[in-house]
Image 1 (tube, rainbow, N blue to C red):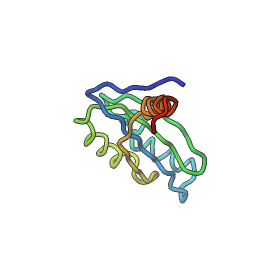
Image 2: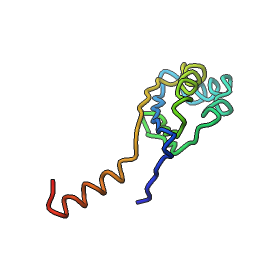
Image 3: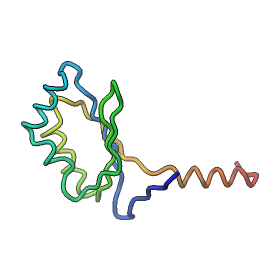
Length: 111
C-alpha cells in the first residue's frame, strides 16, 4: 500500500458531494456547466489527492491545501456545488503510518 503524506504546511480535506437525487444526470451536468464548476473547482493552490464516485452517494474528493485556502474552498463549494450537491467537509489525515506504528507495537508485545 502506497503511503500518501501531505506536506507539513498543508492539510487534507475530504469533501462529500452528495447527489441531489431530485435532479437527473443531465440537470446536474447542466448546473455544473452553468456554474463553470470544472474551471473553478478545485481552487488554485490546492491539489487533488483522490476523486472517486460512490454509487448512490455521490463524489468523494480529498484535497491537499494550505490551511489559508480553506475559506476559499468553502466559498467555491457554496458558489458552484450547491444546487446539485449537498456538501460535507472533513479535515482528514493519512492513517496508514499510524496503523503501521500500531501494528509494529502490537507485534512487539505492546498494546
